[in-house]
Length: 112
Image (cartoon, rainbow, N blue to C red; front, side, top):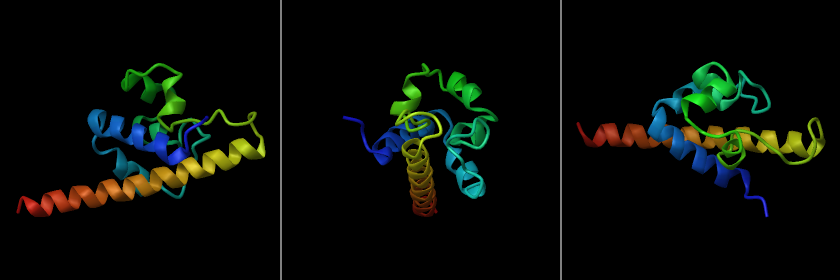
């Protein structure tokens, strides 16, 4: 059974939290152009310039992209099912970015 998009995004966000802690800023700044099916406007593209470069920087094998919420393998390319999955992934990434930003602000306020 394929995990829900938000479960995979949680895993990917935890990876980015370790490797690129400011990832959420790019997602929030560019949320209107976030397109998970794009190599340059996906989460990795917004943070590293291009999807494949992001995967290399994260030192992740290609098959890890799906399990970390960076790509979809649902349906066939261009299908309604795949497009719906990409939309769900984008929404999950924006929600996760908002939650991460909130945690960062709360953490910063506690240290003051």
